[in-house]
Amino acid sequence: MADDPSPADKHHPQNKDILLIIENKNPKNLSILIKPEVLKNSAEGRAKIENAGWLALTVPAAPPGVSSMDSEFNVPTEELGDFDYYSLTGETNPLTPIGTCYNLERGKCYKITFTNNTFGTDCISQELIGDIPHVKGGLKIIPSRKALPTVRDDISIPPRRPSEVLTPK
Image 1: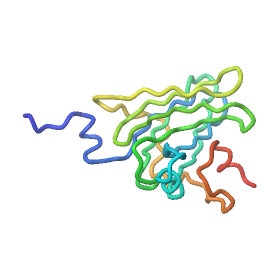
Image 2 (image 1 turned 60 degrees about the vertical axis):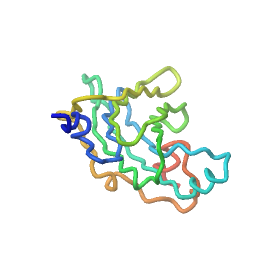
Image 3 (image 1 turned 180 degrees about the vertical axis):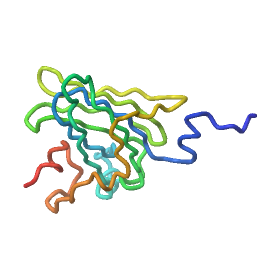
């Protein structure tokens, strides 16, 4: 039938959230920051960034003998502001380089893999099309509000690193 939605549409019917399947291949806990991508150099961009939200959460380290800790996370874009694209940044240590995946489009599903490199963390994204795999036996982080820390009053613009939100003053 021509009106049958594709498997991806069945998962996201008229939904503008982003579904993330996250693989933490680091031997340490992974702090993640999800925020809208905003062009700051225009008046419209500066106005939009003031209304932009962000989500921060932690994915546990892979236990000994396991290659990765897999989790599933639904990013409710209405909580972050009305933007077309979002970025996801991960770090295992606030003193080392971060790994960032850009151009994550709302209404889509992505497999995001974080790996450890010599200096910090790498982020690799892959859009998943068709049947959406669900993590079996992994961590399911839904709803997002339970994973959020209290927003700090001294942060007035979207943070650059997860540790800016997750690390106490």
